[in-house]
Image (cartoon, rainbow, N blue to C red):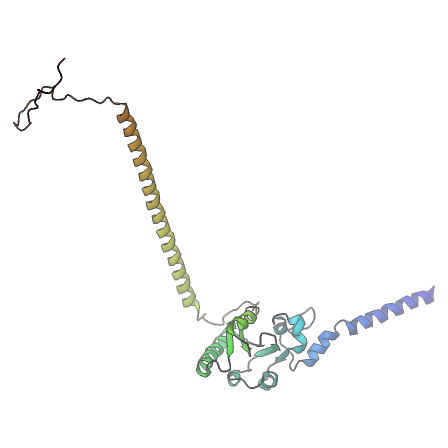
Length: 259
C-alpha cells in the first residue's frame, strides 16, 4: 500500500514538472526571441502586452520583434525614413511584425505628450518624403503605428483598424486637445440643433399645407352638396325692380309666354 502511494505521488510530481516545462514553452521561446524585456507583461502568461495588441497576435507572435533599440528595427524592417525621429528614451517601446498586408510597426510612448510630439514630427517628415516608397501612418492612443510595403491605402487601413489601444490616457498637465474637443462638440451639437429645428419647421409647414388642402376640399364638397339641393329659377324679367340708377336695362316682354 505504501509503495502504491509512493508511486502515485511520483507520477503526480512528474506530471507537475512536465506541465511546468511544456505548457509555457512557447512563452519562454517567445521571451527568448525578444531583444528586450517589456515593462508591461501579461500576468496570465508573461507575454508583453504590446505584442498582444498586434492584430492576430497568436498567429504572428513568433515573428514579432519587441525592442527599445533603433538598430533592432533596422534589422527587422530595413532603413526607413522615420527611424531617425524615433526616440526610445523614457521607456518607449516598439513592436513590429510582418503581415500579408504589409509590415506593421507600433511604437508605444510612455505619455500622451510624447506621443503627440512624435506624431507631429512623423507627419511633418512624411509630408516631406512623400509616398515613395509609401508609408501609411496613424496615431492610436499612445500608439504611433506605421505600415510599410503595403500595396495601397485601403490595405494599410485594414491593418491599422485592427490595432486597438486599450488603456486609459491621463494627461500629466492640461489636455492640449481639450479646446478642440469642446469646439467639436459645440459644432456637432449646433449642427444637430439646426437640423432638428429645420426638420421640425418643415414638418410643421407640410402638415399645415396638408391640413389646409384637406379642409378646402371638404368645404368645397359641402358647398357643392348644398348647392345641388337648391332649386334653380329665373324670373325672366318678370320681377319688379327698382331702377334707381337708371342704368338697368329694361327687358322686353314681347317674347315672353303668356299664362
